[in-house]
Amino acid sequence: METTLVLVKPDGVQRGRIGSILARFEAKGLQLVGLKLLKPEASLLEAHYAVHAERPFYGSLLKFMGSGPVVAVALRGEGAIAVVRNLVGSTNGAEAAPGTIRGDFGMSKSFNLIHASDGAETAESELALWFAEGTLDESLDSLAWVNDPEA
Ligand code: CMP
Image (cartoon, rainbow, N blue to C red; front, side):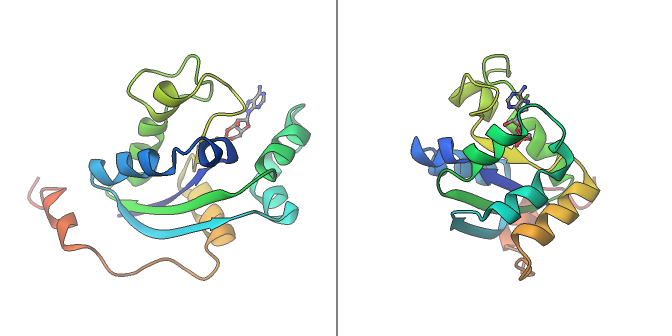
């Protein structure tokens, strides 16, 4: 089992896409184990995006991400990190495959609706930042019908 972090970014919240984005993860069979709506502090965003600190878009990225509420989501499932990345699609909505969240809901590289952890180490550090209080331990009964225990 893996747990990964998703953020619905300010554009996704402002455009009323929280429900339709979360619905895709639920429909896939991932379990929500953390969920909160918040306007993130600059210090949280700086820690989250430290890896991009030298990029030319870093300043505008922090400004955008701090411009309004975001939804932080922790999702659990078998191979959840890669499963979620595949559902999210590639960075630029204009090029992301139809059927992915970015491919279906957006056309921008920066206003790309959603963030998802890109690997096991990132998921661990990002979850510690956004869900310092921890995530839900309990598993939904329905998860037993998502992955075949004998496969
Ligand atoms: P995210 O998955 O949150 O990780 C880094 C973010 O930087 C990315 O999504 C985009 O929102 C943003 N980003 C990546 N490349 C560019 C770019 N060339 N110009 C502007 N923003 C970018």
